[in-house]
Amino acid sequence: MGAAGETVSVSREVAAPPDRVWAMVSDLARMGDWSPENDGGRWTGTDSDGVPTVGDTFRGRNHRGRRNWTTNVTVVDADPPRRFAFRLKIGALGGCDWIYEIEPTGAGCRVTETWVDERTRPLKVVGWLFTGVSDRASHNRATMEQTLEHLAEAAEAA
Image (tube, rainbow, N blue to C red; front, side):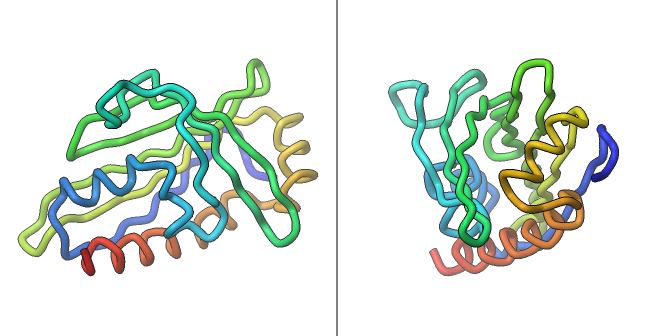
């Protein structure tokens, strides 16, 4: 089931400006537009201008096959247009961080999506039961590659 503290990162060149890409990855309600596992969700706490800031919370909807589950996450870093990160934490059971880093390039930007696994063994077992995924790191690498591909297509078409 993988080791706690395991990290997976995937990068992709995107022919779009960093601010556009940051706005897209920080709009968690739209994440389902490019993620094969996430179906979006809703903000449960955000400031009045709609731009997420550290401490804002979001309830996400996810699926894999016929399995569906929700997650509650908290924004832990919001530095437009460079970095956006949120954390899923279930008390003492741990959780994971999702991090998006955006670097300007001559043709647009380079986006790196990183998943940091901080789940305890009991949470990994619960996760496997809910999602049917025993090797979360390999699964996430594949879905992260798809997410960034779809994100690039959407950002470049905008």
